Length: 314
Ligand SMILES: Nc1ncnc2c1ncn2[C@@H]1O[C@H](COP(=O)(O)OP(=O)(O)OP(=O)(O)O)[C@@H](O)[C@H]1O
Ligand SMILES: CC(C)(CO)[C@@H](O)C(=O)NCCC(=O)O
Image 1 (cartoon, rainbow, N blue to C red):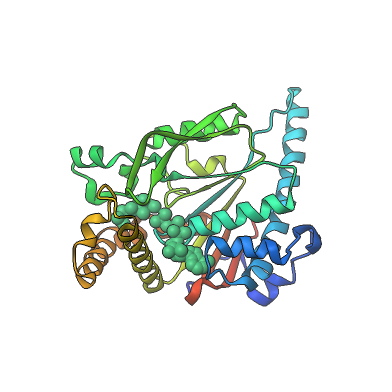
Image 2 (cartoon, protein in one colour):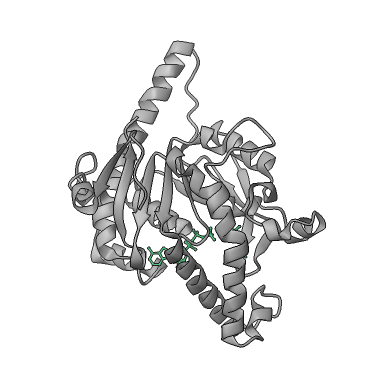
C-alpha cells in the first residue's frame, strides 16, 4: 500500500490490537458468541478476528473522541455563555465504490450500539443524495453517476447542518441498490441520535456548489482503502450477487433484470466495462485523493481482512 503521510501513525494489526482496552474495557464490548453470530449474519465472510483485533480498538478510540467531544462543546458553550446544544457525534466513512464502506458502517453501528447501549447510534449513506437516474439522463451525465456533479450537494449539506444543530426529525432520502436508483419520496428519519455514521464515496470531497465541506460536520472520519485490483474483484462479486438475487426474485423492475437475460460472461463483461469506465476513473480522480484527509485509514487485503491502520496524529 501507499506510504502514510508524516502526520499519520502507522499500525500493523498486532500493534493496533494492543490498544484494545485503553478506554473501553474489552468486556464492555460484550463480544458474546451470540453477538458475533449476529455480526456475521451481515456478511458470512467478515473475518471474526478483525471484530476483536481491529474494531475493538476502534470502538475504544471512538469512545475517547466521543468523551472529548462532549467536554469540548460544554467548555465552548461556557465560554460563549450560551447553553450547549450538542448535535450528534458524526463519523464519516469514505472510500471507493464496492470497497466495503456500508459493511464497515453497519458493523461499526452494531458494535457502538453494544458498547453504548443507552445511546442512539444511527446510520445513513450519501447514495440517497444522488440525482435520480431520470435527472442524470436528462442532464446527459448518467455515465458520471457517483462523480461529484451527480449529487445534490446543497441538500446533503443542509441535511448535515440540520443534524448537527440538533433539529428533530431530520430526513435523508433513500437509495436502492436493487433498483440502482433513488427511491423518490422515501426517507429515513432521524430523531436526535447520539452518534451518527454517514458513509459514501464523496464524504471527504469538496463541493463546487458551496464552500462548506461535508467533512466540516465530522468529528471523526474513516477512509476504507484497498488495492484497486481487489476492489474491482469485490465490485464484480457484488454484481454477481445482485444478479443472482434478481434471478431469484424475478422482478422485471429490478435494475439487474436486463442483465439476467444475458449469458453470465456477457453480463460480467458489461459490469467490468462500468468499473473500468466509470467507477475506476472516479476512484482515481475524485475519491483516492481524499484519503489523506481522513483521521483514520483502514487498509484491507484479500478476503477483506484489515492489515494496516493509519491514525492521524495531528
Ligand atoms: N468485511 C467484509 N467481508 C466480506 N465481504 C465484504 C466485507 N465488506 C464488504 N464486503 C463485500 O464487498 C462488496 C462491497 O461492499 P459494500 O456494498 O459494503 O461496499 P460499499 O463501499 O458500500 O459500496 P458502494 O459505495 O457501491 O455502496 C459487497 O459484496 C460486500 O458483501
Ligand atoms: C451508487 C454509487 C454511485 C455509490 O455507491 C455506485 O454504487 C454506482 O452505482 N456507481 C455507478 C456505476 C455503477 O453502476 O456501478
